[in-house]
Image (tube, rainbow, N blue to C red; front, top):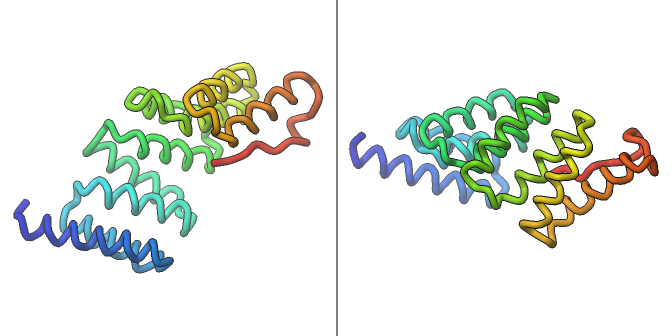
Amino acid sequence: MNILKRLKASLAFSKGVMLYDQGNKQLALEKFREAIEYNPSHVNALYNLGLILEKDFNKIEEAIENYQEVIKYKSDYPEAWNNWGLALVRLKKYEEAIEKYKEAVRYKPDYSEVWNNWGLALARLEKYEEAIGKFKESIKLREDYLDAHNNLATTLQITSGMASKESVKFTRP
């Protein structure tokens, strides 16, 4: 790839980040797509495009395609593995999400958010004892992580019989 295309890709990506920070999500999305046109292996543009598609436009399947592209070019990108898992959870594909979380912690074992997300997927599958272990690992890595504390407490309420799974709410990332 020539240097001019790389520079244009970097410029489009930077503009996309700036536009997103200013709240202009549609134009940011277009700039990330432009960056990818110039450089199809621009993993940060692919990743950010996936984030916007998932979180701001609710295009889960398209977001997953972007996370897959990121992994194709950079398999050791734990944030992409994590967000791929989160997208799968939104589709209620918990077992598949767990596989993505395993990959994320393989590349970044101290990624507390992934351990919490993994625990949530296990809790959705009613594998509460395993979920408790993941929440505890998350807390061990980041003691002030309130979501993991809440999710651990919620799971303990369910397993102790103090609450039913229908009456409690997990904290989602």
